Length: 366
Image (cartoon, rainbow, N blue to C red):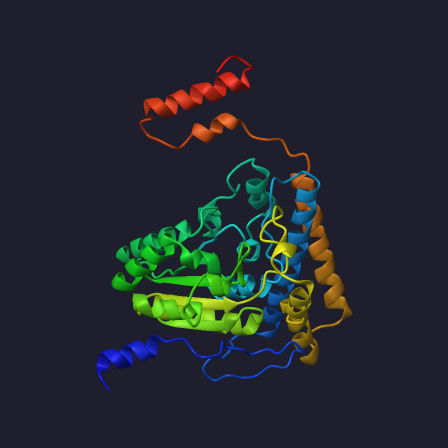
């Protein structure tokens, strides 16, 4: 067989996503995807998912009460986010979209500061360099370019870090991820493209996003290996991500991961999902809930009891309470800050916009 053909075949994703954990908690050992997690780490993965869901629900409640302008829930995607972020080293960088609450909590990003984005107070009130967690990105797919460039810069500096960028199935239809993956493939940038395939790009189902057999098949066009995992299986997601991360760290180049999951809530709180999906579909998806699956696994391993449940539930409740206290009726910043840190040498048009807003805020004639 021609060597080029062999290399192309090696890049193809598996026919079935990697799956290690059944909904009832049964674990299937896979020699190609071994786990290096001890008992404490297994419990930690579960804790992070539970806390993520509790804070996520609190954020939805806050939006319904007028405290957030909008919010993008990650309910149902906790395993995909928590496990993938957990597979990184602390020096590695994360470039999120607008939905990665779970990944942020893995990095100890303050949820109150993060949610300031949705309140409109400030663009994610955390220091990216303290957590190696970039600001959330509202434009679809632009963060893929940021992650690729950052990883390339680290390579030039002989820094062995890896960057990981999150985007959804809809993001694969945008131009920015295409450009990022082209560049990363050519220059072997140590970046992992992590796609949460939650089945809908807002209201558009996956089969209207691509004619490819799977999203992971897109990777071969960039000379990048494509991986697929059950994104509701926290152990499979961790194992697949760790494999891709270490491959990138060793100098073998980027990878593309398609994590198959399901968005249990609306696209954002301004969306009405009943317009495009049925309750029957939602009920079926709920059977693969990632948190229940991991709890079943821990129970089978005698790693879960009432004491652990009470401890985690109390921590989740305390975190949600802290979020509510920090967001509710929080003062807004100075709108004139919109014009700070934009240009070194502001243009006349830019200065004119500043003057217009200042006049409006002062109640004068614009």
